Length: 142
Length: 142
DNA sequence: ATAAACCTGAAAATGACTTTCAATATCGAT
DNA sequence: ATCGATATTGAAAGTCATTTTCAGGTTTAT
Ligand SMILES: [Mn+2]
Ligand SMILES: [Mn+2]
Ligand SMILES: [Zn+2]
Ligand SMILES: [Zn+2]
Image (cartoon, each protein chain N blue to C red):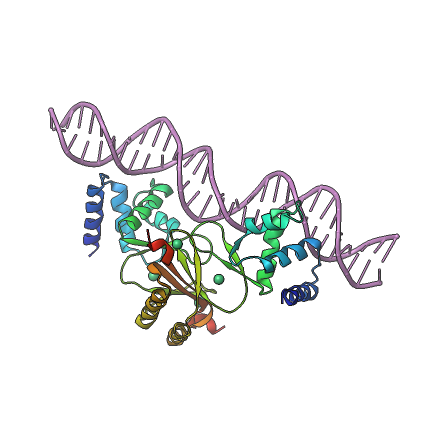
């Protein structure tokens, strides 16, 4: 299944006159294997285990590329660095303000009502973010 | 009603060993009168109409102060500068990605379902942001 | 009026990107 | 396999919206 993502990336590169490179292959495949919600800097450390000379900028640009071709989403929770995650089923997030833990949730009724709100304002939704900040179950026991 | 906000601010200052100054008074009262969703730089221009020597940093610090005592909310829509708005009834936002227009909405059913989601994850919500990005009614006619 | 504690504004620092540019690498056409 | 036009890479420099520092001013409780 990661193979199919690599394929998707290659097609995108071809169709746009871009080139396949060792760096892109390594960064992309590492990203596809990595945990969700990874920082640029974290992914950089990860790929440097195989290729110590890879630069921050190349990881950065590759993630933007993945975002461009729909294989990654970029998230901006709170302040600081953004997080990238593998694209997949739509979902929203709950972020623990104590430990930083991220929990994903999805509620079709909320999504429906959201559509209704848009209709009532004659607003054409392109994207949305619904983030809940608070204390995760683990952090409440303290 | 703006008077009561000024009062709230003064109480907060007193209770925290902070001082009442011309700058704070001017900046706060200007903010209370201003349109919702104002940038630091915009508010600065506004207060400089009465006091040309006010510095950006003082406006910045006063807005953080207002946020601290619950009289303002800071929003980060999209990229760039953040917006501050007078605290009031809770609501969420729809942001037009073409013209930047901001529309406020509030849906109790969504808020309820959101609570339900939190309960199901045993998550203690402290705050949330629900933002819808897309084309406003006006911008769709183009 | 005093003095301790705060506040102000200009300037410098921060931090997370984002852009620039000279050196390399890629790949379709020999 | 080799060439050469075009794209990519990585280090360094640049952006930009804050955020911090610091040398005077102010405020306010005696
Ligand atoms: Mn996620
Ligand atoms: Mn609002
Ligand atoms: Zn937690
Ligand atoms: Zn619009």
